[in-house]
Image (cartoon, rainbow, N blue to C red; front, side, top):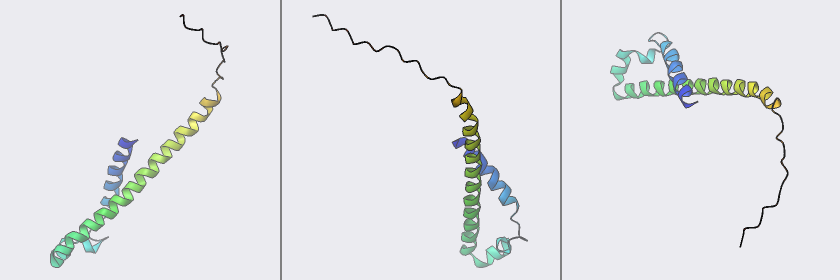
Amino acid sequence: MGALVARNLQVSHSEIGAHLTESTMPVLDPRFIDQIGHAGGMVAAMVDAEINRQAMMIAYIDDFWLMMWSALIAVPVVLLLRPARLSKLTEPEPAPE
C-alpha cells in the first residue's frame, strides 16, 4: 500500500501541477516573483506545499477505496470457510521417572 500511495501521490501532483499556469495563478509569473525577491520563492514553496497536501489526500482516498473493495471481495470468501474440527482433548501422559 505504501508503494501505491507514493505512485498515486506523484500522479496526482503532476495532474494538479499541470493546471497551474501564469494565467490561472498570476502570482506564479516569473516577473512577479523576481520583483518581490525572496518572498517570491516562499510563495512558490507555499503553492507547491498546497499541491502536495491535496495530492496526498487524493492518494489516500484512492488507496482506501482499493482497500474497501478488497475487503468487500474477501467477505464472501470468509463465509465459505468451514469451521475447524475439534479433536478429542487428551490429558498429557506423565513423564517417566
